[in-house]
Length: 377
Image (tube, rainbow, N blue to C red; front, side, top):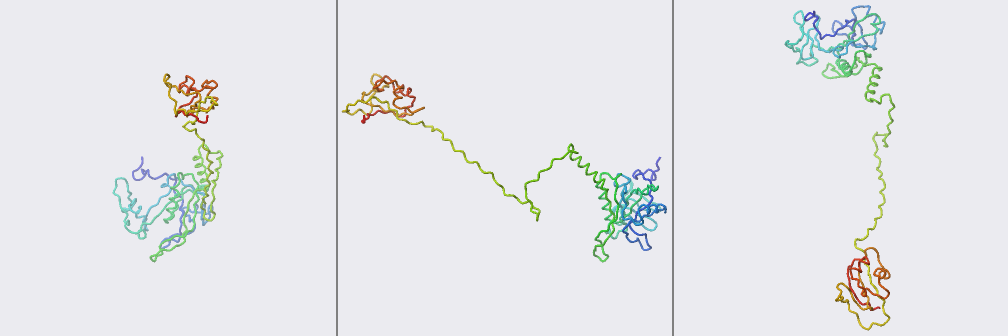
């Protein structure tokens, strides 16, 4: 059964134990921390493990690769706090505002559920004046030490805020870290910081960097591409046709091409429609004119036959002109005589045809009727 406060803590991940520490600086001196180094310094409580490390990676290694992370969760592999230390050990651990561990007498108290939260004693002070300094711990596996027979974890210690932010950003951006090979290395960069005279200056600092192996990155890209393509994965993707555009090489801008309009088609000739009004034609039933000279004038309009309403009458020597509107075609005199059934020398007035019957036989509509004597005949 677990012991409360000793073995009942389920927040701690299982681990094999620490066999060494990777440090960024030289050993402590009597006046404080040693100077910053540009390589990893390995320390261990067992000298034989230190010798195995030097044999595998060298005395002053600037790069350790590949390394592996033992846990799948970010916080299990990497922790970052503010801690206050004295000669007798740690005084308190906090996040800059509230303490998670603090010393009480000869022991330590932790912030557990239901307990009163203890504030950091330096929460209201500037970062430069706080006695609790940033500290980060990255737990790694060095395969070459395992192959040499020394199984356990190695902890990388760093107090650089640039290291803390970089390591956290890289690991937080990965969905999976366990089983992935990483490259851990040191590299110098110019960093702006206080110069001790109330101003800031840029100085060179050797920082810690971590990045996944290129093989893992290529695998992630291939998997992402396969997922994005779906059924197209492994198939030849059709080549896209480049747009018809011109790029200004000096500015990189796309130059707009003038728009060429298609020629407009020539308008079709309008078809002449037949007029709604039908062609007027002068239809004149003609009678044979006698060669004798006319001696008296004919009346302007022939009187209607008294015994036959609707009929026209006139002398045989007279000619009646009809102004009519032709429905289908214009007829000459011979055609008129043929349609009306006139005999040679016979006039319309000599027949029993009414005006309506004559127009029906000629297939015409009457616009205006009139009768007059043709003096020329």
